[in-house]
Image (cartoon, rainbow, N blue to C red; front, side, top):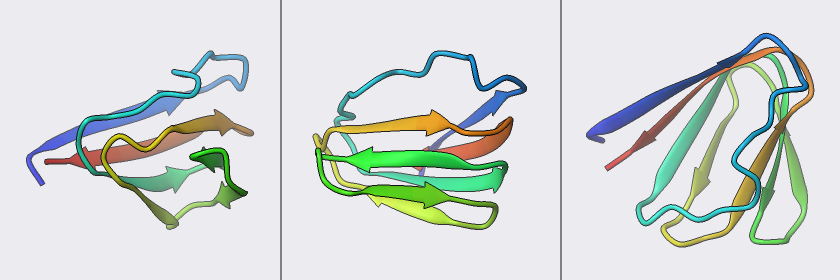
Amino acid sequence: LTVAHVYFNVSVDASGFGMHVDGESVWYWQAQGTTIWEIDGGPTWELNPGDLVFVGPNVGHRSTALTPRIGISMSN
């Protein structure tokens, strides 16, 4: 892994990126709070602290914060 981004929001009113794709594989680690993830129009996943999700390259996904959160996105 060569790139990491930290996502931090104190409000659930913050707008996210909506449904989008990344050109590389992404690992997302939920450090604090709770988010809902929708991956490629499939089922949704609730991520809680300590949970990790993998999204392959060019796969549509969206996350929605249910609580204030801290998360780390890692890719190569």
